[in-house]
Structures are given as C-alpha cells and as structure tokens.
Amino acid sequence: MKKRILVFRFSALGDVAMTVPVLWSFLDKYPDHEIWFVSRPFAKDLVAPLPRVHFFPVDLKQNHKGLPGLYGLFRELKKMGPWEAVVDLHSVLRTHVLTSLFAITGTKVAKIDKGRSEKKKLTRKDNKVFKALPTTADRYRQTFGKAGLPFELQNFPGKTLYGKDSLDSKCPPWGNLGGSPLLVGIAPFAKHQWKMWPEEKMLELLKLLDERGVSVILFGGPGEEQKKLEGWVANLGMAQTFAGKLTMSEELELMSQLNIMVSMDSANMHLASLSGIRVVSIWGATHPYAGFMGYGQSQADAVQVNLDCRPCSVFGNIPCHRGDFACMERITADMVLERILEI
Image (spheres, one colour):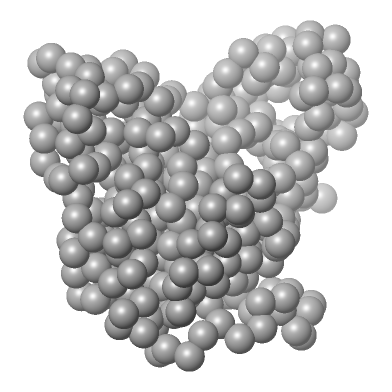
C-alpha cells in the first residue's frame, strides 16, 4: 500500500497551477507515495494528468463553510487516512484550522512559509530591499521538506501531459488555428488593474502582429472579457478567440499548440508554463523578484522597465502612488514585439 500525503491549496488559479510541477517532482522522487490534493473544483483538470494524484474538491460556500463545515471536512479527510503527513501550501485561516485538528490527532503537519516579511521589504515605498526571493514553487518544495520529504524540482513535461494526445477528442473545438508559421497566444487580462498593460498599447501590439500576418489566439474568461476580445477580433484579420467556450483541459491543450504566449503577471502565464510554452510576460506594479514567475520561464523574457518604485505590490492590488502608472505606460508595443520576434 502506498504512503499517503494530504496537500491543501484552495486558491487562486495561478497559485494552484504552480503546485503542479512541484507535485510532479515529489512523485518522481517518491514512487511509493500518492497525494490527495484538496482544492476548489476548478483545479481538478490541472492535476488530472498527474499519476498518483487524487483530487478532493472543497465546497467552501456550502458544505465546508465556516467552522462547522471545516470540522466536517476534517472528519471526512481523517476517515480517508492514515496520512503520513499533511502539507499546507496555502497557510490561511481555513487551512490553519484544518492543520491544527490534524496535529491534535498526531498527524505530522508542515505549513508553507510565504516570506511575508521579505516581500514587504521588497515592495515598500522607502528603503526597499531589492533582491530576488525564493520562487513560490521552491517555497512549496521546502514545505514538503519540513514534513521530512526533501526533493529537488525537476523539468516538467507539460507539453506531453497537456498536449494534443492528452484529450480523447480527435476533433478539437478550435479547428484551424491560422495560416502563419508563428502562432502567438495573448492573454491581456489580470485580476488587478495594476498588473494590466493599458488597452491601447495591447491593441497597438495586435495591429503590429496582424500587419505581419502572425496568427493570434486571444485568451480570457467568459462574460466581459469574452465580449471585449470578440470585439477586438472583429477588427483584426489574423486573430481568433475561444474565450468562454473551452474547458480547462481544452484551454491547456490549445496553449500547448502555441509558439509563444504573451501575458501579464497572471494565471495565464502559469497555465501556459504548465503547457510547456515559452512566455513573454509584461510586468508593471509587480516584479519577478517576488517569486511568481511562471515555472521554467526565464526572466530574460519578462518585459519591464526599471523604476525605483518597482515593485510597489506583491499582487498588483495597490494603486500607483506616483499617479502616472509609469511602470506600464513606458512599456511600448515595439518592446514587446521585439521580444516576440527575437524568440
């Protein structure tokens, strides 16, 4: 019987995506172990291709809501044991409740160190300590080490796991992906506005690519993002979008067909990284030094301008204190195009 590890990471999409190569690396080192990954339902397709990873969905709005719901979740998970260790890759109030309950019953528990103090020094306005911090993936890896399960991060075979052979469908829903030899994905949105390149600059880049006959796939979510992207596509000759029309596994497969992805510091950077695609990322209020670069990506492909005020935020949720949003406004369409064409 294989040894069992329980892993918590409830959100957000990008952070959950960054767990996947870490779980892969762990299982490569420990073939006699299996993982039960506890997360929100959206994460199921992310871990589905991993061998020896079982998915347990949490319902934090109903069944597992509040202290009674968390206690019920604990009881459900405890019955599924015994667990060699519980690894908390989220470290929020909900997971603290759960890990405390497991610790009381004698199960080994390890919690992630998010490096909040280091990140505060990196992003503060005055006396900034500007240095590269451990990546989120490495923090995840270190958490397993605290549980007595050390390992090194490995190259992640994302193109194999999420590529065209990973779907049963012989006729993908997107059909023809364009006639040019270069297929560029562009994901222009992010959760917070201070991580988003201004719209007029993105439209200028799309026009430049269109003039060169480059096929473009635009990525975004359903609803407002989908509507906006469909409006953009209507004015371009070589662009398509499937926003709001694909499952997570289909979107990952579509990304695996790209030559390059252009994205913000956003979930799509991490999804493209899982799919084994090189990402040209655009950074404004945030910075790769905080540890959120896509897995396997190079900082050489991060388009950014050097300003004393950067980074001003870990997550891009703090308004620009300069008032001119210079970190994004000074990034030109030609700068991003140059990086794409160099690659």
